[in-house]
Length: 232
Image (cartoon, rainbow, N blue to C red; front, side, top):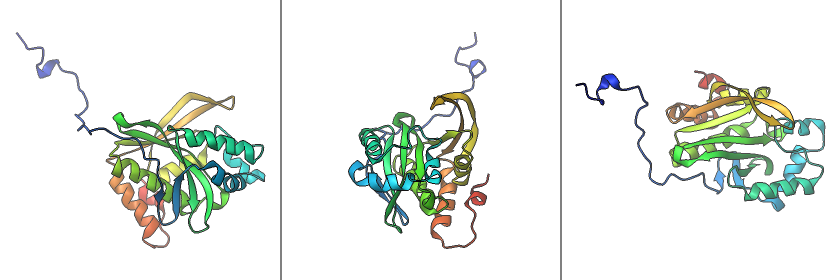
């Protein structure tokens, strides 16, 4: 009689994953780089500069188009929202300060935090127009990826955005995430349908991507294209 455990009666399964003792969520702390500092939300201190960076004219207020909140009627309304962000653990929000300008220029967060699965998403990301297309976003994401892969030893970091958000989709590819597809009718945001574009990076991708990010950020080489460096 053939054993029920014979290889001929087995279905294919994935490889075993080495366990990690007591996997942790991302830390609520300051993360400091050469160009930016990420600090836990402080509504009283952060609101004036963040409001000014994201309100006052149509160009600045466009950055809220694909967000679930904002723009806000006034500083008080934004501070109330930031107070909710401050107490949240998932998403875990941080204020982005441009160290060169000495100004708060945006917000980032870890969300959909799954320590036991060693997986996290980066999202709720926005920057003042003046900080866009600078090292601010690149180093902010670099610091968050270092936390996820190097400190927490996560296996996967995700990036998701509205499928219409061409800038976010291009940023994901530039930063080294790989496109995984469109989730149709994934969400209803502001009463409208959202098809969601999914991107991800794994711990196997990270050494190569980390090297490319550090080269682009810190080598001083002129004319480097991070998109080309990270192109698969």
